[in-house]
Length: 167
Image 1 (cartoon, rainbow, N blue to C red):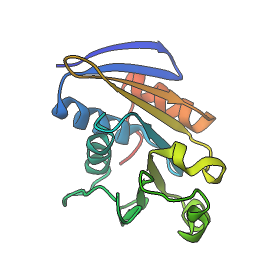
Image 2 (cartoon, rainbow, N blue to C red; image 1 turned 90 degrees about the horizontal axis):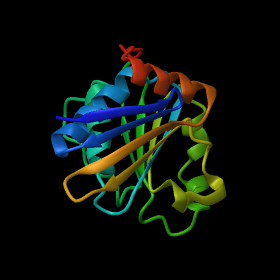
Image 3 (cartoon, rainbow, N blue to C red; image 1 turned 120 degrees about the horizontal axis):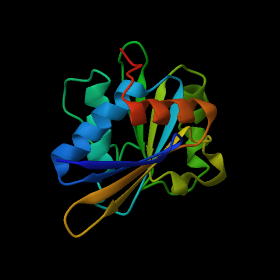
Image 4 (cartoon, rainbow, N blue to C red; image 1 turned 45 degrees about the vertical axis):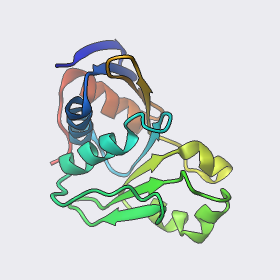
């Protein structure tokens, strides 16, 4: 079970007891997304970023396995109505490598872009629409989801009141 509290329309907080609760939050977040959207997943190693990504991808319609793109940096998913690009910047050697990866091409699409370890991208990162902070606790983890743009505010507000946008 999860316990949710809501600070305001641009901030959603939830305690996540286990991996299943983290997957379910990812699926709930997927339901309120409005593409194009940039999502930052923040937290220490083992905080649940990849698990939340799996929930997001399942909520967006992906039925196969979800692997962390730690070594490939980006993993594309050809989903409808919008493609999803899952970035893991943990092993990024230099932020300028994002230019070589064609980040601008991804941004030119009506896509969902999920970034784990966004702080490693430095000034090369696009602005986030939604920022998720995952913090381990003694018995689970805390999730704080913040809208960072008008689009992000709308998504977080919809998450807060339970309105689905994504088909």
